[in-house]
Length: 183
Image 1 (tube, rainbow, N blue to C red):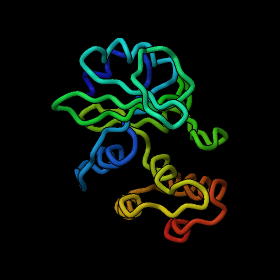
Image 2: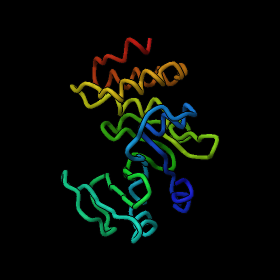
Image 3: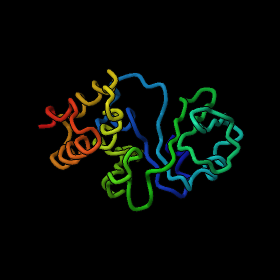
């Protein structure tokens, strides 16, 4: 998969559950898709790279439609191909200098801190940023798999990551059940 995206002239990274597994260096649970974060400017390049071999559907106003490669205001494309996991392509939130939390763009990390690499060379979103998404939207309760991911990764977070995640959770949620566990 990394070979597929290496042709893009943009910073990209694996996100969500697979990012945590790349960070931990082991597979811990079943995944139904592979989330990839890319800059919005990558849209036409990605369409050219994946079509016609992949079925591409863009989410516009909450509904998925066949994507013709034209730029759109949404942030998500599902890419499907026989024999491959579904790719959940998420545009925005990453530039050559920084990563922004899509739900609150004031929360950022320098790209060199937000983007890590596995020993195999896969770029992935840093665990504290992944966990911020997995904490859910304000007022929601984290899903069971997200709680399990948090519990698996929490012991591996360094002081800087814990501090950033705690401050970010407080900003987004005010109070959150993970704050106490972060110390």
